[in-house]
Length: 263
Image (cartoon, rainbow, N blue to C red):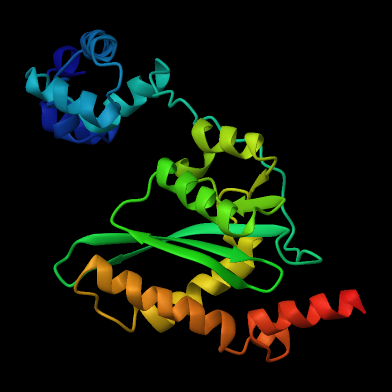
């Protein structure tokens, strides 16, 4: 129009209803060049997402909008393929109460810190029949070897249950612990990931333990923490009334149920 009719750019743009900016616009980069560089970078950096690739393009002096990079990224199917974690085959576990003591235990970890900032852990073991605290082992670090040591000590002192229920923590699901369970004829039940209430009675016990001990005391040493926890376990089992047990303590409830079975 400008050449044929010998009119100005301004008049021509007004005539066809476009802005002069659009008329004078020159693409900064050819799409083919950007796409070629994008594919080259994606091949070299296989774990980079589109934002990181966009930054790499800018580093190379290629002036391109991040939206264009995203379009080309999708067009060439460069989206990262994240390998899914291998999930345990876990059957949904209902919240059940065993018919008698020493049938099913629940295990779980809790965390706290000493007054100097050092971290400590507790391994809580609860008998699900009476919510009795079978043991609470406290240490700076508790790995699978220590889990087995604690269970072996309990095996010597009072025997083992038929079933142990826990979450999917690596200390429980490792081959070392699972082989121990097989050798000792203990069935290990894992709750479903993200479903802590499948171990609800243990979670309730943990809440009580945190409220009455971990949140109530500032421990200056590991020895002090162990001593206070040991005293609390004795009080909890023999003196503390439990609402689920009609106001009885765990040991009173166990003794009553045992006597009723004998009668």
